[in-house]
Amino acid sequence: MLQGLVEGPPRDEAPRGSGETSGYNVGFGILRIRVSKALSITKRITVDPKQMNGVPCIRGLRIPVATVVGMVAEGLTNNEILRSFPDLEAADIRASLLYAAEDA
Image (spheres, rainbow, N blue to C red):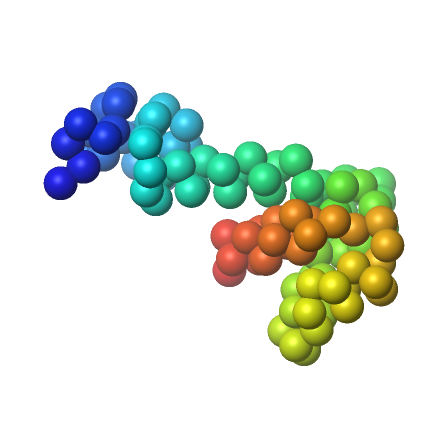
């Protein structure tokens, strides 16, 4: 079905359990989404044992991912969260949700 849209090894030949999809170049679809999500998360979510006891935080700030995810779960809008934490960006909220989804 994706014949001609995916360059690289066929999906069945990808290394299993590696979590890497960067070997694929996709015109559209789920593989590009996975690669962009991974890049978004790694640029925005930091885990430093010397900061907040290694709790995942946003961009080295002392704002835990769990705090942002909890605010979303409580029904706060992105604008309300951004007003509460002026150092955050909308992409930080998305990265927090992606991180939580990957960690679940």
